[in-house]
Length: 454
Image (cartoon, rainbow, N blue to C red; front, side, top):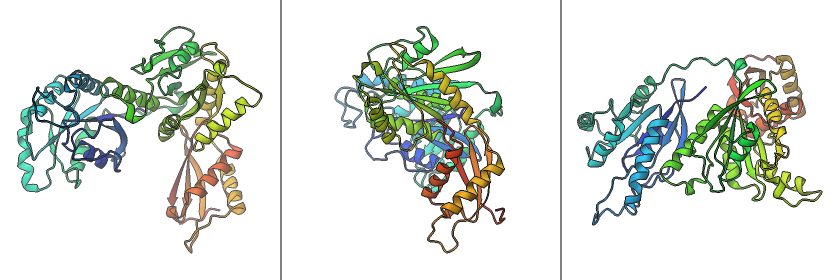
């Protein structure tokens, strides 16, 4: 199911990053008094009353500074170049977001920059909420009413630093989300997202898979700006392949179009069932490859590692094993992901990709019989009892698979706090020994229960 997207926009230093951290419940965005600190797009997930959505924290929209201006903020330099980039960034944010939150400074009041941003937002038919931030004292609430003159949506008083008003803001945000229709998991057809760093051959691979030139292929990194969907049939079965923009390291993301190309890539992963992580064999496995794999895992999507440009590598009998060892070391948190060595240019082994993707997709819907599952867990606990510093010790009473896509298992235990991550990993390894769930992450949930079922 597609998660709605909420974009936080506004001029620098109004508290967007602080509000972002408040909404997602963790300190993920860098906070600084220096305007322009948030240069890169930051994204995270929020949940309000059972409704999940993505939040995007954008860099502050800097207005053009006339020649001779005393503004010494980081964004003031090169402001002429920023004007078009900012305009493009705002337009793309409007296109991509389901709800837009314009953050303003209630203590400072309306500024010319606020008015300029409001003019851009007035041209959209997307819901816009004005979050009047820095209302840290109830006596400051009267300051928010002037922001209605911006001609946007509802104005909500918040104190991002203290959390006051954040619940009211979330209530208004989720009220704009369309009612999600339930997804029939069994009837969904396969969706594949091709992801990776720029210039690793993602578009070439897509063209080879679909058998025609559907996307622009170029040696210039970053050619693909949008997530492009292509629907084809493979052995009579429909599937959609999504080509995405290359995901750079955050410090190298250029403001403007490229920021939102990354957002589109992340949304493409959200829409997909299986991600093909494309790696350039000539460059080897990099930390950014691992970072992208982490994005896939965070969204609980299945993954296949595609080592592209394999035809350009000088090989001996050990080369492929050495490459696999290095990749496995870098992806030690996803040991279940299959590896396929291909050449998009020559077509070498490309035929194996869709075959493997369908096999991995089927694993997302695998169900483990409850009796076999509990027998497996019982044997695992007998062979390796959980170690605990608590005198009670961990007890697992009963286990059941509560859903598929991704496979999710519920453990009824005496106290979830006694489940150490290492023991959870041990149980997952034992489960995968009998039920591999190839290419697919599995989720464990632990619930307190007083009923002894074993």
